[in-house]
Image 1 (spheres, rainbow, N blue to C red):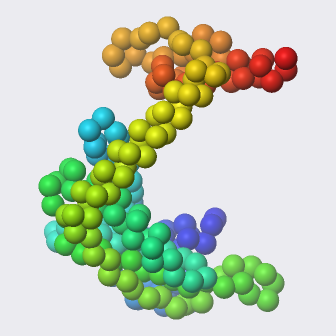
Image 2 (cartoon, rainbow, N blue to C red; image 1 turned 180 degrees about the horizontal axis):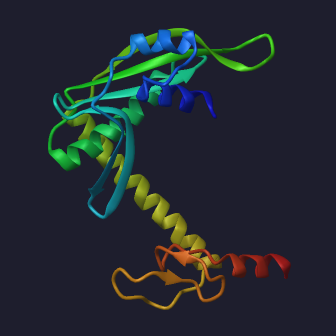
Length: 196
């Protein structure tokens, strides 16, 4: 099991016996109401999906757990901005508090990645103007990806039979379930083109 996942499980299931080092980290991180909280939101026609490491419905706060050799505050903030945007879209309010716990790792003498026991908390502040700007970035990126997929479709794709709403679509050639007629790239057609 990957180290971050193991730590996340240990934080969530505190009654499970663990190493002294992980117990030391557990003492530094408050318990949460909900772990692995799933958020599904829609930004226009764009579906968003994210999982919060910890969430409290009582005070609408978010807890995130990270491991690594050194802090990565910029990327952490961007991830929390995504989470805050999804929460805002569903609840029309921002998290009251976002706390990220970074647990330091290093390589031991056997070149194995291990926790050091050091844990530092970071409070991340997200404002409504941040969410509005980030939403525009999501839409812009989505459109760029859509254009790229349509261009790829023009070069390699095959148009499947149309389906009724909520009916699954399958490519006639490669028999793979597809989610969009415009963005499916038929693997059979790609292979055929590569061979010739």
